[in-house]
Length: 413
Image (cartoon, rainbow, N blue to C red; front, side):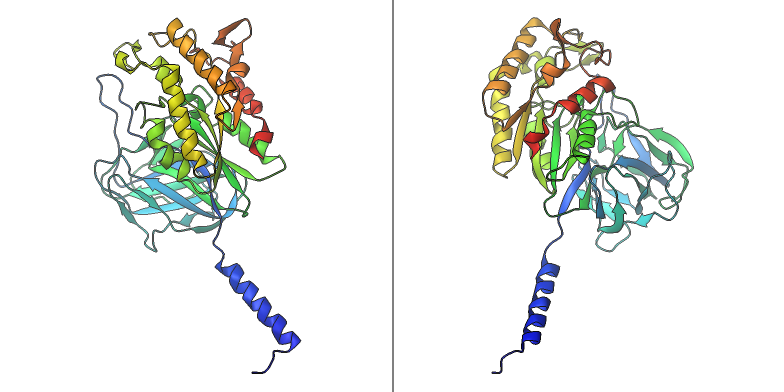
């Protein structure tokens, strides 16, 4: 057998390197998410149901990390019947319900332009060649020809969505709007391709992580403010994904499945996750026995101790560590002044004991002391007046900004 010449050998090595490079899988990361759950039922009143019939639903999304290719995850997880998306698109968002002319790309599913999503199932689109920048605003549109019930939602969307007049407008630059929405429907995740070393930080929690009390269409949740800091920082590039659900609890179902039940879906299953910040437990403490008018938040039998919460935290930590994910624990914010029995001195004692363990146990890989940031120095059981959204539980924009600034970025490197 003859030997290859020097030039031929180099050419062979180059071809082999190209083949190896082509065989390397793309690195996908989550850039945005909204945890799905059932529609909200208030007291004895049934949950409102949104139905599309020969209409287009368009929803704006504020991404964190950008990329060269995009794919969308839809969800009919809580659907009572199959949901058929007869057409869908992704585009760069303009003002309001508009999209930038020429930016619309039709979505496909295994090459098909429509998909029937069974009850309890998600659907992931084929990748789309669309370059999106960091903090890009995109719009995802879906058209439902026949009657389709949207009973998989994310109630606290805080970013406007739009339902059209009759017709398929998924690629239309301007949407003839019939109804404006604030909740999320059907959408649960947006992924992008990224550099191999890019990772994802998941903010995991309840309404305080979900941004309740912040301004509509402003992206003023604490994970949004944290993302803006990370976007301009050096070190490993991280996307920030918000998996908060308003009314969520650690140990029992509330709004959405309990955090213990949904952790695999909303954290471990996301592509590229490297870090998670856990802020959950205040509703476990406050809900049992609390009542606002006809709305009973939680049965008194569901009262929890600090030991109960600690056992739940240890489970989240163990499950994350099994996947090599770094877990930061955050202290629970003050809540004195909330009415309806949500706050009592006995419940405050549970919060203080849980916070002491979060700070001192060493069980988490790091601690974010949101309690220290948010509390009134003169009255530590209460949130600062300048941070309070007026319900004595949720921060407003200024409070969320302070929370986003309180995360030590060294913990994320």
